[in-house]
Amino acid sequence: MKHYNFADQFRSLYDKAVQLYAAGQTGAGTFFTSDESAFLAANGINAQHLYDYAEDHNNGGEPGYDRALAIELIRRDYFLNVQNGKPSRRSLEASSLPAKSDAVQGIEWLPRLIPKTKAKLHGELPASLMYSCGGDRAFFTKHDIHPAEFLSLVWRNESNDAAVVDWVVKRNAAP
View 1 (cartoon, rainbow, N blue to C red):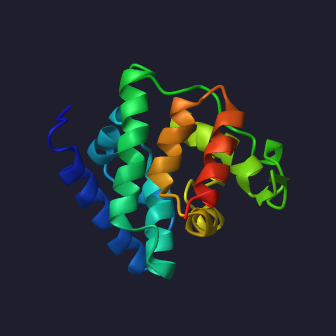
View 2: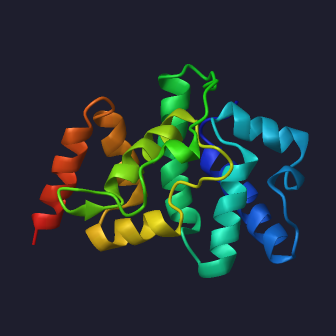
């Protein structure tokens, strides 16, 4: 595996996914060769992640390559250095997430976003969920938080949801 060129390889696959989606091709499983899929898997990423980025990129311009790369660099770091390159055998049940309207300390979406972010970090998001989807991006925009910044925050406080909530509350209070 090449580490130095990861961003370049990721960029070429991101661009390929965006172009294929724009041309009308659908289905994450149809986007990449076996070698490309192996590269993604070796870095803790799957075709669905890039498909979701491509779909949202084509339908609204976000999250965009830069945010996608920042997110996947953190996921990759966790995968390689915490999971030792071994994928999780679990998958988050989407139905187990709190409702989109649930709030903690008056902040809607946050109770849902924390476990969803942990699932992204661990590589446990089902194909039906995307980290940094439209709802997540609305939350991040409203609270002035970069999606990768939040992913990193959750990693640092993986077993302390209250610390994540406190950080978001403080961010909201900042001028």
